[in-house]
Image (tube, rainbow over all chains, first blue to last red):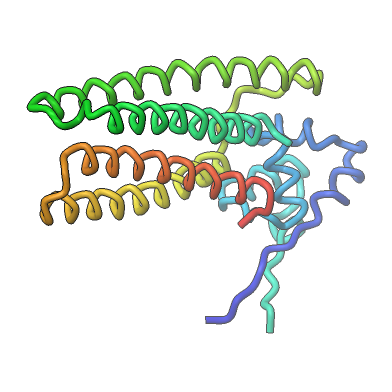
Length: 72
Length: 148
């Protein structure tokens, strides 16, 4: 099985959305600020539900927020 | 460092401290020949129950103190929320704790089967609880700091 990782554009989307802070995004999607930090730094891959909530918070499709890259 | 990480570190320190004091006391009692009587099992049981009560009390005190210290130094009003990442890390910590505890329990049963004294068997079980708890907490801290 090919290994890969989930990358995201959350930091850019936050800045594009009125310079939203990590704390504001965390409150909007119902997680802690540390979880948003971990997601942005690719140290944690969110669940599908959380990924959708983040995309809805930015009013963009899921694929505009998250992408999956294989390591090969 | 998040509130959860501070709690984990405080728990590891308190567990190590209480268990160290317990071991010193038990060793002194063992050297004094207090576990060579017919009441050994009862005495070991009482000592372990006391350890559990003291451990819980110390954990509560240290966690309250670490909470206060966290809010005073950080000045951050972090919501008291356990999200999906916290739950996942908690589960992974519990899993490793279970494995360590199971291994320790099997070792203690082997000790019992080969005729080792009750004092040693019960303290092996307590030791595996403690090591399992600390291993689980160490893994949780690793996941909080380094990710998955």
